[in-house]
Length: 134
Image (cartoon, rainbow, N blue to C red; front, top):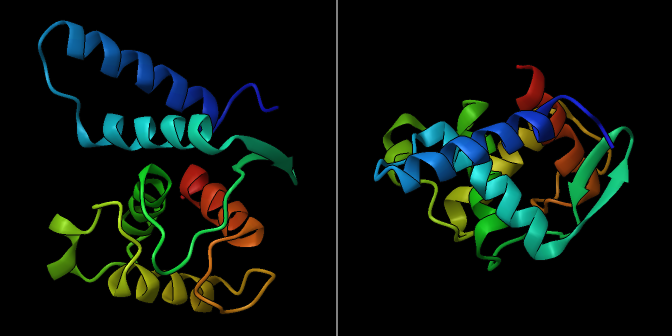
């Protein structure tokens, strides 16, 4: 397990979101993104792969929930969502627009596993590494 990086930052942001909620404030978009990560990992569990803790789930068309929200947040962060779609993109439903963004990601970064529109081990690994450092 990594002591620093995305997980540590997300834990800190999650704590901040809880404090803000207790104080009657709303969470910022960045804090919401970090809470998606935490909720996803709690919901599906995780496993360690090439230095990162990854969600224990494969996502594709028809998937839904908080792990899809995490995926969608990462795709927005990487600039893979058309500007006209950004405002309503993070909705937790893996539909056509999410599929198109995943395929765009897979084509752009050529991660192992190729272009299949699925978010499995290789795509999760690349997304998490890139959103941590880009």
